[in-house]
Length: 203
Image 1: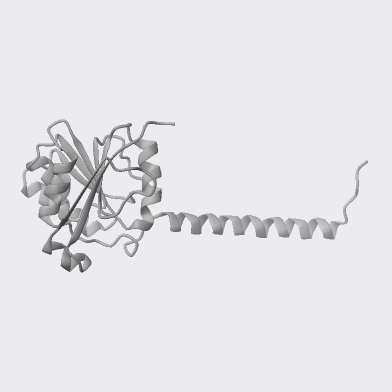
Image 2 (image 1 turned 135 degrees about the horizontal axis):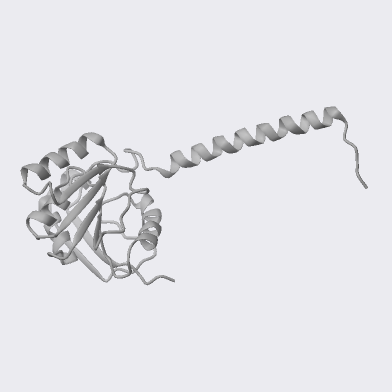
């Protein structure tokens, strides 16, 4: 049996559909905005040189490695991986365009611009698949999404080093804790921990 609808009812239904459709677009746009980290969520805090060395040493970076730094700042970590630890190359992803320019300039001055690059990009849409080592110094609230991204995009066994903050569900294979006065201007404390992970096997 077919029912007949009054024209006014059809008009109201059409208007309601249009309102819901527009609301859906608005929600999607807000969700997209929330997904991308802001400078407030991921403020630039330079990693002291001594800690850069400890991170790269803990990761065992060497000639066979390609290092990706998420939130690369002035580029010191990736550039050091190539110049001092002889990594074959690396990329840094950073949302601040001025820092990206500074990092690329620093790589050129160090003579490694042919092997190192820095890109202005939201880390959640960055391609990290080439990495054999990923380095992080990110706020804890971001690390759940970061962990999910790395699990999907990296090969099992890829090394991940997180400065200070643990990934929420992975178990570190090594943790190094130490004190350094260089952390005081950054965090107000001398305490530092570096956590080494290996990407787990795909489920």
